[in-house]
Amino acid sequence: LLIGVPQETAAGEKRVATVPEVVEKLIKLGFQVAVQSGAGDAANCSDEAYRTAGAEVLPDAATLWARADIVFKVRAPSPEEVGLMRPGGMLIGFVWPAQNPELMQQLAAKGATVLAIDALPRQLSRAQKMDALTSQAGVSGYRAVIEAANAFGRFFNGQITAAGKVPPAKVFIAGAGVAGLAAIGTAANLGAIVRANDTRAEVADQVVSLGGEFVKVDYEEEGSGGGGYAKVMSEGFQAAQREMYAKQAREVDIIITTALIPGKPAPKLITAEMVATMKPGSVIVDMAAEQGGNCELTVPGQAVVRHGVTIVGYTDLASRLAKQSSTLYATNLLRLTEELCKTKDGQVNVNFEDDAIRGLTVIKEGAVTWPAPPPKLP
Ligand code: NAD
Image 1: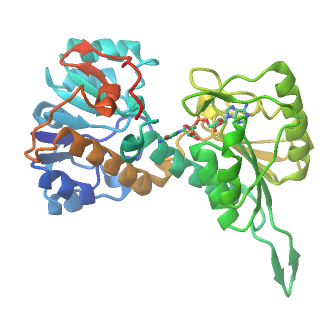
Image 2: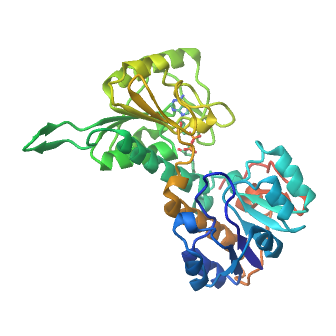
């Protein structure tokens, strides 16, 4: 079968769904690979590099979609892209079926088979190698620290120099999931003093192992909502948490917020009053900007200055490190392809006996199969 990789069409998206190093491995599995000319340019993957790896380079999106048996994408396809898709074709990429009911209908009407990488049952340990939410959140967490460092006027690490003593920057991370943990590790490696909080007490050890200090809210309430995710906390907890966050806001130089609750708007953790008490030149990076933001003053997609504090609300952090995020994403899709093609003959078997494959198959030959029943845990 022919795997096709078009150029991403969402505004500003720099990632690409496969990279030359992975093309070679897909070919070893028996597939042919075609890439739209220029698809990898923004991720430092040239047409020439894809050709050298064995891919065919096609001139435009229409040709690519018409030829491909399987299309690899990053972002959910636009209506125009679905229009170009071959009837009965296969699509693998982010789809977000709950948020995109019309897209689901269009894809089903095409008779497509659709594997939504965002629907992978992440709790299965054998699914980890395919977990693109985790790989992309890791890149975003790293990049959030780089954005903070870029907007901050001082060093992260403490230094004693002939020109004077410099104290280390203090960084507070709200939410210690995948992105938050990546941010903790990155900020600690740069030499900052790092503190973090999460409503799920189970992450405290991970925070410490990455070089951070876990700061608890003075209120007894467990924050796990099932499946490793958070729940909405009680009013009493939220009041105690606000008090603790207000104290941190006065003390630290940088706040990175990552708090999300599945299917709910992002919890508002940093109020306008807290921002006003931060030191001039402080920085907030709000990684929840796309879901409404953890900070009241965040403007999604922009960096703004309020009360002398730079508030970064970029919603494309992974795309800002396009070669890295594309390489990890491409490897996630390669691992998925290996599961689909155990026979290494360039054919795919969407095996519903396999919990991971069942979970992420949201449409099979035009029939909507989402949501999948929960996987049987080992
Ligand atoms: P996420 O992006 O949904 O949330 C980010 C973090 O914000 C979470 O840690 C959450 O607890 C925290 N949070 C939510 N509300 C908060 C609040 N009011 N105050 C402070 N923190 C708050 O989560 P994610 O990073 O995608 O994943 C979270 C968890 O999912 C992981 O830590 C892990 O337990 C689980 N997971 C498991 C696997 C696996 O088992 N293979 C893979 C990936 C993720």
